[in-house]
Amino acid sequence: MAPLVVMTTAGFSSYALLLTVAPLWAVQGGATTAGSGLVNGVLLLFTVLTQLLVPRALRRFGWARVLTVGLVLLGVPGVLFSLSDELGVILALSAVRGMGFGVLTVTGSAAVAALVGAERRGEAIGAYGLAVAAPNLVLLPAGPWIAESLGYWVAFVLSALPLAGIPAALRLASALRLQAPDLHPGDEGLPDPGDPVSAAYRRLLRPMLLLLVVTLAGGAVITFTPQMIDSASVAAGGLLLMGLSAAISRWRFGVFADRYGAQRFVVPLVPLTGAAMALVSWSVADTDGVRVGSFLVAMLLVGVCYGGLQNLTLLISFSAVSRRHHNLASAVWNVGFDAGTALGSVAVGVIAEVTSFATAFLVAAALAVATLPLALLRPADAPPPADAPQRAG
Image 1 (cartoon, rainbow, N blue to C red):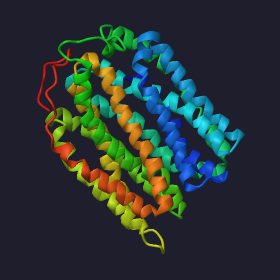
Image 2 (image 1 turned 90 degrees about the horizontal axis):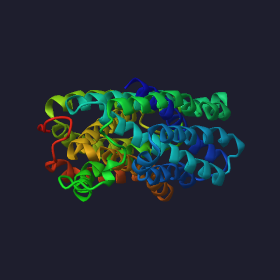
Image 3 (image 1 turned 90 degrees about the vertical axis):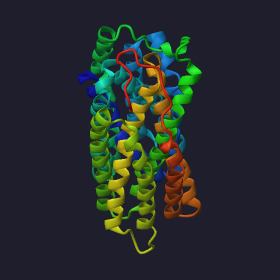
């Protein structure tokens, strides 16, 4: 777990830093709100497309090569942003970064399942989630400040941090070979009469859709808070509260899920997501300025749902399929995560351009509430995992 945490922290530092800075860089170059929303949309489109290929790449090339290439693709293009603030250049570099991020996300969560037994998997996902959330906690709110106070070039240089994670990635690859030699990367492409791929996809659809909606909400808030809030301190404070609550909830919900099962925590978090986004909408609807108190409370609640549902849906995904399909579960879960974040960036940006941010966030709130029937469904029965007896939840 140690090299996994180091590699993940280095990789997500670049992602978190540029998630707000890259759209601002596009705006500085003359892009509209919709155009700036495309920056993260393109990043995550190529992330999703790459995620679908990662299991096969692992099988063909092995963990070490895939992890190294992914970190290079994520770390190098950020530095090249300094060459131009034209939207076309930014979108092209974002596409390359998306490919690297796709590798990092699938391999990271798949490694958790490979290294840790089912009885403590929620706790391990929580530890992995902290490595993901810590950069978001620090660098998401700090990114705009770094760019505007110290210079965009500082943010672009810092975005090369994934390169520093390559040694840890190589240690992780070695550990996976030693500790999980029977779990061959990409085995989800092989026939399994007890758990065919088609059945695995059906079981994974429910947690993926639940995750997609909450990351749509979170992605919209993260992308547009620096643009819709005039006060830099209020925007940074809101993003900090969201990041802190997301980090804590993603960490602790895993421990609770190991003890009591994930299902009972999913149900209340889904409508809470809708309520939190509606509160964000109300907070920014006043033409005289943002309602600071309610905005900060809303960001805190969005963070709780954002972090908690990430952990719970990943745990449900791994529990829904046999060990053979854990790489597939990781890929599908990450597709839901990043597709939702991309939709939050692009669709909310377009709606806000045509109407307002308040209306756009109300749409996101309605989508969250609409998934409540999925949350209430009992998870489909799954075959017992190879590394532990079947258990409730």
